[in-house]
Length: 228
Figure 1 (spheres, rainbow, N blue to C red):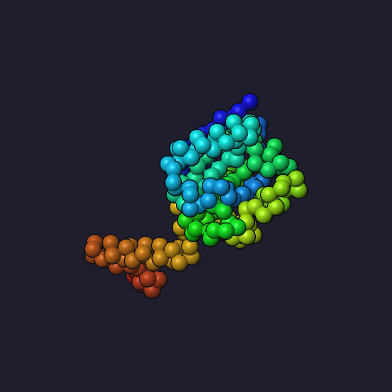
Figure 2 (spheres, rainbow, N blue to C red):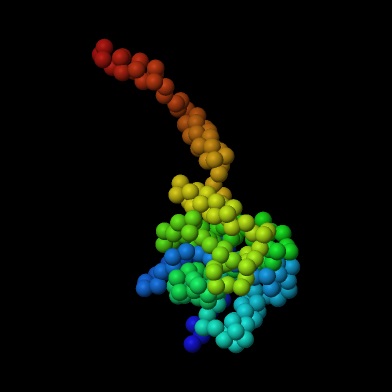
């Protein structure tokens, strides 16, 4: 029986909030499998509105292939589209369907270059999946690694899964130090935040006629109080 689709688009941070509100009992995936759509290509993806694209994909998986589900995500340059519910198994890789999430990165990465915007959304979306149930990015797999698949090139040479794993690991590390926008917090940004905060504090004190107290000034005041 067809499991239905969610069919909703999310910006990266909205997707993170959406996933945080899901419950993963009793089904919990063990890892993420990365695919490329191949067809539609990235060049063709925006020829139809996203909602139409979702319905076309639903028809393809449900009616043409007669599967009970499809992949979980379609990641484009503008949105992260949730297809099969993330709280149930999908169908995308023959050996791993019962216990993995399937993430389709929009494009044919045998023939097309990987768009920076698509890559940014893919890193953020996959990091969110790992984050929500504590998966290790080292477990991420390329579709071609499935011993039962005949898609022996998926997700294509232009989508380097090793580099994707590293980028997801970096994104998760950034999130652990408290950033709010996926991928936005870099060491340079952190340094700038500290410098800006210090500058604002000094400016506010100056406006009130106060001066920052240095250690020597505090010792002098303490000594004067002791003589009274």
